Amino acid sequence: MRSPNRWLVLLAVIAAFTPVVVDMTILHIAVPSLTVALGASGTEVLWIIDIYPLVVAGMLVPMGTLADRIGYRHMLLTGLTVFTAASVAAAFSLSAPMLIAARAALGVGASMIMPCVLAVIRQTFEDESERATALGVWSVVGSAGAAIGPLAGGFLLEHFWWGSVFLVNVPIMMAVIPMVWLLTPAAVSGRGGEWKIGQALILVAGLISTVYAIKTGFKSGIGVSSVVPFVFGVSLLTFFGRLQVSSVTPMLDLSLLVKPAIAVGFLMAFVASGALAGFELVLAQELQFVLEKSPLEAGLFMMPLVVAAAIGGPVGGRLAHRFGLRPVASLSMAVAALSLVGLAYADFVLDAYLVTSLLAALGFSLGVGLLASSIAIMSSAPAQKAGAAGALESTGYELGGGLGITFFGVMVNSIFQSAYTGPNSGGVANSIGEAITAAERIGGHQGEAIIVAARLAFADAHGLVLILTGALVALLAISVFWGLRNVSTSDVRSH
Image (tube, rainbow, N blue to C red):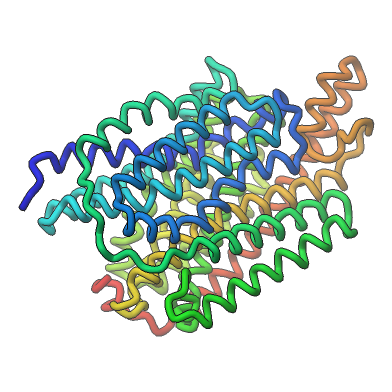
């Protein structure tokens, strides 16, 4: 029987989903402001950004299982409460470590909300046509939310302090909570499998320890402080992998990766989401620290990238249906590689039209790549393992976002340290954020010399990292063309 309030239910869960999606990109534009305000080091800035997707990557699947057990409404309300409280804590953080902890809590809340949104939509809309419409709305909001993040962040920072990018979540969530309580069904799905929270914690701990080791190693050199957490993190990740292979009901079914098309799809999801997230972070810093744009100007400058990425998915689906997955997927990665290299050599001031075109091409090609990865995974997985394939795909997206930020951030900071030739006092050569903070504190001719040298060093670092990333994405394009050779157009059409 159709629920008379089903479209209001859709409104409620979409409203709950929107801040979660916007939070994935809105903070990028605020990085320069919060870096100066909190005196955050380059490493702390990376933790502030990437702790969110790393936590979501580990907790998404077990939170979905728990929601099956206790009911989607209960889990959704809990997630909304956690997300609201964490947003307040983040907005009023007094230090970088406090903000990192709040971002981790936001990740926990998001991992509770995300699986419930899709589940409630599927549970509420029994008619296939209406369900397709509802899922289409969900997809559009997901793409549009990520797209408006930088612009919304720029607008808020133009008028308020950096904490406003978090505080804006609170009134939305406070309005959504009673809507969810009143409108969503309290029924439990009855599917409740084994809750793999222990395995999830092992995955999160392994990821955080390994990422910590990489950041520490690049900043301070190889030593006990980087080797010990690296060995510990890799050991945990290896143990996690063995658990997945040996378990009858694993948290992540890694056996699916034996199929080349699924492995390639996972790799595409990982790289495309990582390249998009990492590039957005570095671009926001380039625009504000180097080119001295305001947050709103930077947000507007980034719109071709994020809007094209949002459009790329739906259009990519049509292209794959018409021309086949293999050429569309491999060509999208090739275009992304060329766009990255082009942006590395373009002058962001003199070549404004060229840069805008390259940003749009990069966003569109990565959007197509993300959609192609989904088709590759879901069309190659056995029907009885569709849920496991979806979990693997979602984890790939989140892992890619978190580790992509780590890769871009660590490489940019490392090259920045080598390229910086200005006055060096108080660790100004560690990152451009630390250099700008120190320059404002020192002032005078020395402060100006620090800023000039830091901007030149960051521009060099930005360009080199884009060339390196472009080369890696080009290799991925070749791998995709090879790995998808047995995926036919009929497989795509049946997806």
